[in-house]
Length: 245
Image 1 (cartoon, one colour):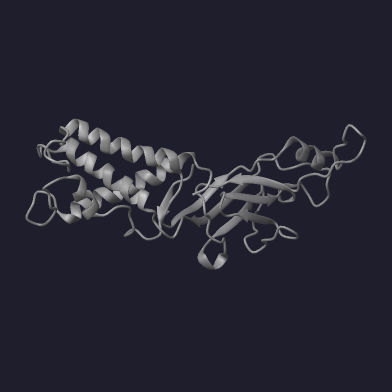
Image 2 (image 1 turned 180 degrees about the vertical axis):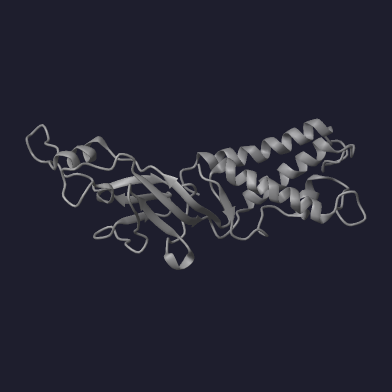
């Protein structure tokens, strides 16, 4: 999968206040061993890990210059090689799917437009063809399923020569620059990030019995941290299993 970067590096999941709710009697300020800035740095790292683990983002991320091979079927290859569609068992000519699929990193892809620095480029042996402006399901070179993160490119872009019969280029490639991510952060994601950071604090520092809870129901540090981390991972595993956000 391609590497991604944040469009707004100040955006992250969870808050210092939420972390404090899981770490009892601890207030992160300039007068303590951990400051608000320290906790925010930990939340930012946890947020990056959440995006990586789920393959999604609840903030805008960008993929730049990702080169990928599209998925081209045997039927499509045969059609461009022989210029003949496939016949069905009944003897009818079956139409060839004109689209080749690319599964993008992320879901909820932002509109791909040249004005925002996005691009879709076909990489051929002797040239690079920018088709970003040629969007359209009916008469364009590509179309996009934003929610599912699927890009469909006309397989004809990879044909050898202007006339069918020459086949497709040996190593079809597409270079992509695009943005993805939701515009709002669900509370379950904020809570998962806060629990993750709280678990890390408890595991890496000697605070004593710092977890919130009544006096008769305060777990030891190891148990409490494990429960917090398990709660965070439960949410993230559910998100990873979902096909859409």
